[in-house]
Length: 66
Image (cartoon, rainbow, N blue to C red; front, top):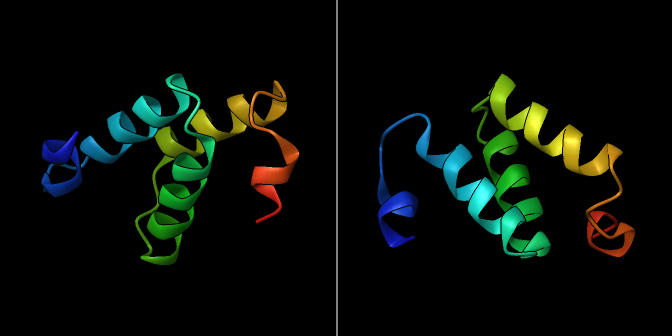
């Protein structure tokens, strides 16, 4: 996981996001998504991943409200 955090490869952040989501580490996933969005690193893949989890109500609303 530390490799993914440090990796300059474009797709590594999406893999890290999936890692967090698959392990129910929703707060970290939402924080990573917000961090990447704020940095202007737009990604259709990341947006699709987050949309899928949000639409399926897999991420608790309390975590999204933070």
